[in-house]
Length: 242
Image (cartoon, rainbow, N blue to C red; front, side):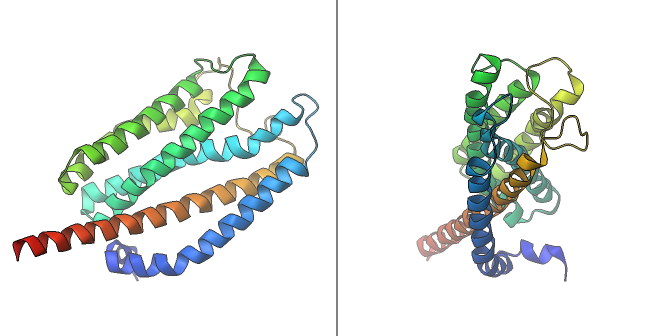
């Protein structure tokens, strides 16, 4: 069986219909379990107090904001190379989801940063590139809506996605290139000095897994909606011709 079989809309709809209940159920379990574990069953940090617990929303949402863009990049490249419509529609479907994660990351980051840094915002390299990534999300979504021909829209948004990937990369790895800046290093790291204590890491991993499955659930749902909308437009066009 080839992976390209799932580029067929019918095959995608059949497979996603089977997978959605399982993915959704597991996402709910992991999110509920991780957030309850993290917010109510972990101790306060000796430096940051209870403020540190926002990590269970901030880190997964920020990670998924960047991951969503790279997933969109993969779908865009497949569209440009192989012209599979499902890949373009999947990238389109992921845009609003990624933007939502970006907004959650920005808001929770500001809430976390204010008591830690004494300011809601700083023009830190990582924060700035993350903000620019959010603007690229807005531009990507707007470009899809502004162009009537779907293939032309897919072409132009794919190019925009390639350009925006620079800022997606920077928002994840900026702290590796610039030592200055307020933003801390990775919370989950093989470096013991940077890695958070296991009492926080285990519920954090659970939340991250839940956010990943939440992202998959939302993208599958939105892609199915996009396919149905495309079919509806095709049927209406045929009726007008007839």
